Amino acid sequence: MIRGFYASRSGVIGQQQNMDIIANNFANINTTGYKAQQAAFSTLMYAKIQGGAGVAVSTGHGAKVQDSAVDYSQGGLKETGVPTDMAILGEGFFAVSSGDGEDIYYTRNGEFRYSVDGDSKFLVDTAGAYVLDPDGSPVELGADEELSPGRLGVYLFPNRHGLELLGYNRLGATEVSGEAEAVETPTVRQGCLERSGVSASEEIVRMIEASKAFSFNSRMLQTIDEMEGVSNQLR
Image (cartoon, rainbow, N blue to C red):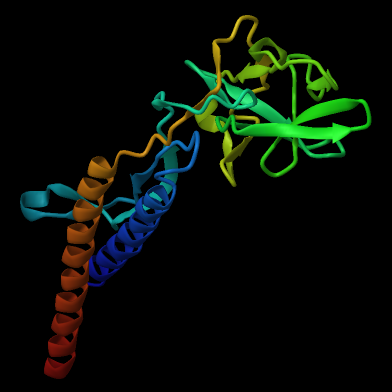
């Protein structure tokens, strides 16, 4: 009976985390270049108990959220007409770097702008981080120079699902993702932004499923607790 208690408890915790991921998707339904996340569950340790006629039966201890998987499907495009807005068609990420040049992040959000420094202007994201070119250097233009999509670097990873979620619609390279490599001929659409990859209808379905699973595990937890109380009174 204790085993059932902990299995139900893990179900409640896992579904609560699942609901948090769904809520985060809803919060970013209008975030440029955002990719929806899904909870990836894994089973906890199995144990073997002796069943009838000497047959061993495997029984689990519940499930947990192992990780959140990212759906990198192409989002729809939104025409803005702004020359500094860029959208990647196909795979790849823009690279941005902080002022010291040490930390490099990757994103699908192509909402950029100019930062003027003397006779030069740099392309930066909404947080002021420098956008990098294919060589890994900040995109720098002359005062009267027009921006073209070919100036921006687009990077691929051997395993993009190994990228680390850093928040603020940014990703970081890890040993699992491998090192970034610049695409030789990327397809970048100027004057457009990639819409969020969140589908409201799909998230509503997931929310209903998670809510019902949460309620079921909660009822199981309550029932097992009541059964434990009755058994303790009989002792």
